[in-house]
Length: 93
Image 1 (cartoon, rainbow, N blue to C red):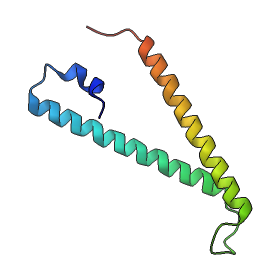
Image 2 (image 1 turned 180 degrees about the vertical axis):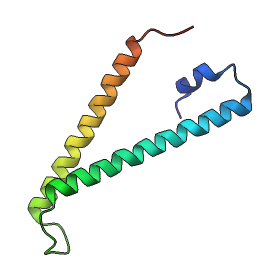
Image 3 (image 1 turned 90 degrees about the horizontal axis):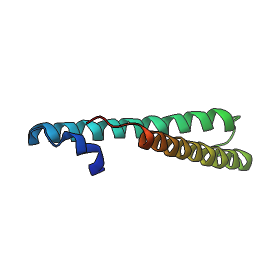
Image 4 (image 1 turned 45 degrees about the vertical axis):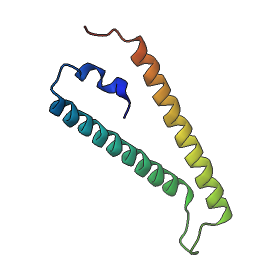
């Protein structure tokens, strides 16, 4: 976990800091799983047409790869934009 995320928690007792760190890690894991599930659902729905074959057809495979690349690029761009906005936000002291 990024230490900068815990910077505001320095005044808390060690046990509370540990609990908060654990909760933040759980939220990050949940969000990662949610993003992965969204990626799978979106690309499957958009790219898989039939169930006639055991494996993906060439066009389906190409579609899934392109879909996954777009999804991940979009997610990275949103994350970067959020970080930019977060840096410009006034901090509370």
